[in-house]
Amino acid sequence: MSDYMFILESHLSAAQNAVLGAIQAVAADANISLFLAGGAMRDMLAGFPIRDLDFTVEGPAIKLARDIAKKAKAQVTATDDHRKSAELLFPSGVTCEIAMARHEKFGKPGARPQVSAATIHEDLRGRDFTMNAIALSLNRASRGLLIDPTNGAADIERREIRACSNYALYDDPIRLFRLLRFKARLGYEIEQRTANQFRNAMDAEMAKHVTPRALYAELRQIALESHLDDALRLLEEEGLLRSFAPALAGAKVNHAGFQKLAKGRALIPFGSDFPVDWYALALYVLTQKLNPKERAALVKATGMTAAEAAPWQKLEARTKKLESTLKSAKLSKASLVYQALAKVPGEDVLLVFLNSSERIVQDRIRNFLSKYLTTASEVTDAEVAEVSSLAPGSPKFAKAREERIAAHLDGRVRKPAPPPEPPPPPEPPPGGRRGPGRPPRRAPTSIL
Image (cartoon, rainbow, N blue to C red; front, side):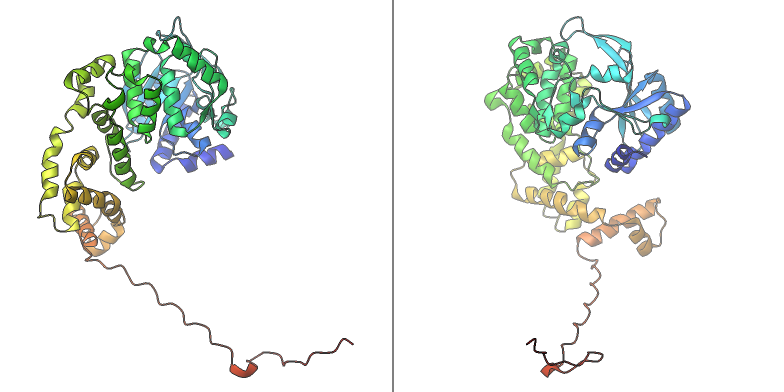
C-alpha cells in the first residue's frame, strides 16, 4: 500500500473507510476506473478532516452509483443526468458523489456547459482551482497513485489558491463566490494572477451571470462552513453577498449572531453524537434581521423551493416550548437537563442558546454541550452490560443505559480510586556507610 493510501485511510472515519471499501469493490467488479478526487484530496494533503467523498470514474457513473446503492444498501438521493453524477447516502450517514470524468465547454459565462466524457487528466485540468484538481487512483494496478496535472499539491504546500486556467472565473462565475469561501475556510492567500483574474471578472460584473440554482447550491455550502462569519465578511466586502438578497449589507448582516453561533459550535465536543442542521441554523441567522419582503427576495434570487425554505423558516416557532422547559425549576439535577435536551434536534438547542436572554437557560445549555455530552459518551455498552446483565440492542438495555448515564451525571457513580503510589526508595545510610554490595571507598592517589 502506498504512503498516500495510508495517509488517506488514517484521515477517514471508520464509516468513511467502510464506504471507500464498498465503492472500490463494486467498481472493480464492473472493471471501471475509479478515483478519489477534489475536496477529499485537498483536505487530506492539507491536514484537514475529510468532509466530502467525491469519486470520479472513467465510465457510466450513474449506473455505477445505482449498483453501489443496491449492494451497500445505500440510497441515491440525487442525480444530474447532464453532468452524469449521482449522490449517495449510506446507512452509516456518510454521503458521497459519484461523477463521470468529463470535459465541460461553456458557450458563454454561466451558461449550461456542453458535457462530454473525458479522461481523469482532462477532467482535473478543467476544474476550478489547482488544490481541487488532484486525484488518487483506487484501481488495482495503480492503487495509491497521485494524479496532479496542475501541480496543486505544491500550491497546498505554499498555502495558495490558484485557478486552473485564465478563464476559470469567467466560464463559471459561481467560482468567484467559491474562491472567497475557500480563502475564509483555509486561510490561504490568493495567487497573484488568480487575484487579477478575480478583480477583472468583478469589474466585468460576471456575478450577474450566476444562475439562481447555482447561487442556492453555493449558499448551502457557505452555511456548512465552520468559519461562516469570515466567509460572509469577505463576500460582503466584495459586494457579492447582495447577490443572495439586495438587503444583505451593513447592519442587515447579523455578524453578532454568527459570532455567538461560533461560540456555541465550539462547545460541542469533537466526535459527539449531536447532529445539527447547520443549513437551517445558518439561514435563520442570515435572515434574522430581514423583513418578510427581504426574505422573500432571497428565496426568489436563489430559486429556493418551499421544501428548501421550510427548515429555517419554521425553526424559531418550534423552539419556544424548549426555552420554557429549560427555565423550569424542576430541572434540579444534571440528569434532568440532559434528558430534556438529549433527544432535541441540535439546531433547536443552539437556537435557544442564541436567542434566550435567561441566564439559567444559557448555563444549562452550556453545561449540556460542554460537560454532559462528554459524560454520556464515556458510558460504554460493556459497563451497562456488566451493571444490568442485559444484552446490548434491546429496549431494556437502552433504558438501562439511560439510567447509567443519569447516575454518572448526578455523581452517583464514583470513579475508581487511583492505585496507591509506590513507597519512596530508602534513603542512603548516614555517615557514608557502605550499603550491601557497594565497593570499599579508596583514598585518593597523588599524581605527583
